[in-house]
Image 1 (cartoon, rainbow, N blue to C red):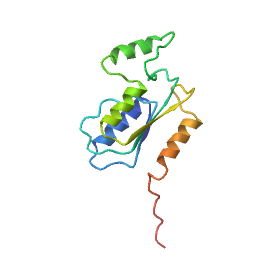
Image 2: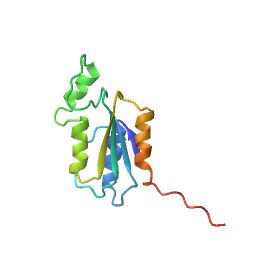
Image 3: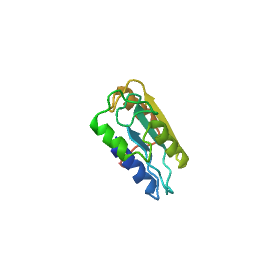
Image 4: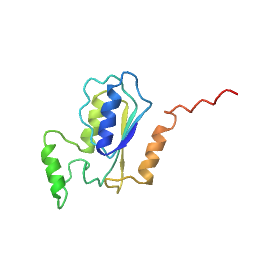
Length: 133
């Protein structure tokens, strides 16, 4: 399962609620919310840019926060959506998870972030079986 931003948070929740694990989970530029009693623990990667303006890394401050960011921060004041906190949540839930911070990337994808995704997925997805002649 792969998704971006809020969708990445959703695929983590969906994947861990399944009794049978999916091959892998990629959460790109995504916050990770608490995972409660996972039924399965798929290999997971959190890819985020170190300049992400929504789910900014660590606790750095934004010079001129916009209204959307202020509203989001207020709504999320009880749970950190920073990269470090999100990655720790995955790991504390027992998921085999790793994180990748892409230098200079904001809340988007680029060739480097997609390459990290492809490298992570190699060997995790079965090749389709050829039809018998």
